[in-house]
Image (cartoon, rainbow, N blue to C red):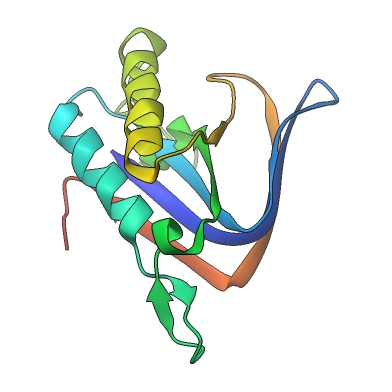
Length: 150
């Protein structure tokens, strides 16, 4: 599983001209899923996301987590995070899970984050043509891969 985590001032998802989700301060998380992802990946990544200390404390140091700040979270599925550009100029997405595998994992991730955060989160719609707007704060953008737990 791969996640791109962006600290945002606000974010919004529009589908077919209608706002599906909107949020204020918090994290916008783009999530890529591959077939080998399982429950351990979901639990580890969810815990990492909600406890990642990337919000400023009173001294202006990134030392507070989403749990501590009460910020919001928006989770968006994004198969292109598993793009391979090794050959040619057209990316291959063969490592990204197909919907029948990815949707249950995406839904489980939503539930796990809500459990770990203690409140509902905003989401996109799996496989929809979404327009995602955000105002990155900092900018702070962090990539995490469950296969490379650095």
